[in-house]
Length: 270
Length: 262
Image (cartoon, rainbow over all chains, first blue to last red):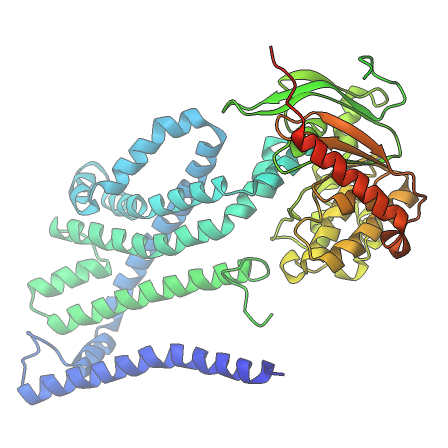
């Protein structure tokens, strides 16, 4: 009898969840614009949002080219992290010896700051490969760690059941362990999506300092040297938008795959 | 107890002992003959090793001493001749009811599984729920799916490890009745582990009362009440007498000294 009001309440909450951050953003932008205008702050110190937007439009051909470069690097790094992270986790799961041999090095890669590795990689690898390697190094570990956790969190009774019916190792892996691990894998991928962008940006900045590159991060450091602060902000906005889009795309994919069965994705009124 | 395997048994445990790595002795020289077509309950307090005995029969656990004898089945096929129902429904949440029930057939690469899946679902009254995901089902319905999965391979031996312990009483009574009619119509052999005196008396043709850890057979009770049994049996004086007998046996088993160990 109370189903309708509850549903209406749910919808109101959904609207709020979407509207509140947007309202806050709008207020922030307006305040920013007002402060810049009233105080007469010069654009090389802090450009007004309107100027940032105008720059975004006027420099679009340059910025969109850089955006494409960064986007491709990020996606490639992400896909490699997915393959590398899940692949390594599967390998570890199949062979303890491989796990014992390699896991410490995976941790070493994870804890060494990528900013420190990037310049080295740029010496030894072609620039594009070095940037990609950075994106991969930062992004693969959360996928590896989460997938490992997922593969080890299988219901023991289900493992027994598979044994009882004489399941092969491959059957246990594909029909039991991977589906069980799917929610964990997506948890790792959501982190990896953002991190692969960060890895790409860090490497681009390091590469830019070495005098090459054309990605968004390179544009940011280049604009910094030229005191073209509005373009710096415009590139920064684009980077944020990319990060947000990656996060939402992965959340949507995860939701579509898990919504029928996993608690994290099931809607409450069902 | 005889030490030779009786050839009219479905499966026999011969002086089976189980000691876990942490030193706990779960079973101590357990002898058990399961005869074809009978409904036998292992009744005992929690931790008496009755679940361990069931897992040893299923081949999920190795006895540390003694042996499991399959007089009738040829050894290579025996592991596939078992249906097992766990205390929890133990369903895969990522696939539908039908997907769960067909799992044993898929794992054994049996073609044309669909009709057998539907037949098994029909037996537990879940025909209309084939495409539903487990999380949408009640606890009792999940247990029915679990039973359908155990039936789908058409194995003659059904092992059940306190399958209804987590259900409410009304659902449990209903599933008790359904299980009995399945057992009667399919002529299966059921080994049923429980700690409930009432459930074991209602269901079983024979009750094996076990001692507290380390588990041994304390005594056996035949429940010579005719099948089909129904609500009238549950309220009869006969049922009450059997329950008293089983309770007394259980109490006496709790007092029994563990067998002297060398």
